[in-house]
Length: 191
Image 1 (cartoon, rainbow, N blue to C red):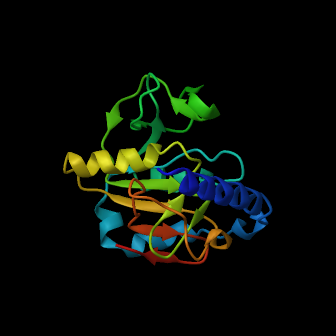
Image 2: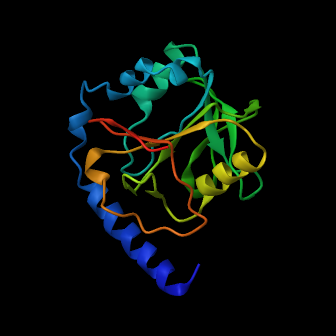
Image 3: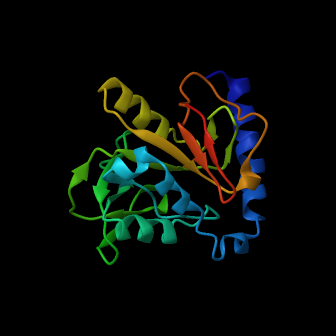
């Protein structure tokens, strides 16, 4: 990535992190927006779902994760093992032991690794072209690229507040588009 693009992404990342921290999270109170996913055959047929445990000011995944388990989906969380660049997804049930991994993210301990049918991806910002702004490590982009390279079929869904939508996420050729973006207001169908 060239220096100018790197600096533009860094600036957008800083601006969007500040903007997200100011969002009134009470808009999620009793807004079970993720339940609309059951209107889609591709969601109902999916058995293995990779989600995440929210950090910082990310949209809360607590209710979503409980909902996925209530539907008898296999819930997985991202793990970075041995500081490798590719995410692994390990099974998680509420109450399972977690350890603090890289970047302070809680990760399942000693559980089975799965290839997910659906991956929920955190966002600092997103645009209607399917690009998302992450924290800058490239872990989800590398994971998605890896799944394409091994011809694993999956659906990627960015999870964000509607207020995180921007006209254009600054991106380069390593950034991967998402299939959908799910907000408390709607499901954006990208790919």
